[in-house]
Image (tube, rainbow, N blue to C red):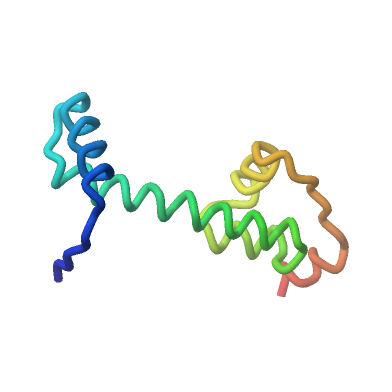
Length: 94
């Protein structure tokens, strides 16, 4: 199923410019850029939930479909403190 969305002219022109530099069609670039942006927003939200201690390390990794080691790397890159308690370990082992 395809859906259409409206873009401001300035955003569409930026997509056209970028598509020319990448040698791709704007119709291919926009969905790819949107998917990338949604992934970034999702990752930021999950990191925020982890930072606020609303989810465990294991839950954060599962939500991003990555292993714990990759999640630890993302947490370090986001300059967040890794605090893994025994309670979280018990929760993750359930």
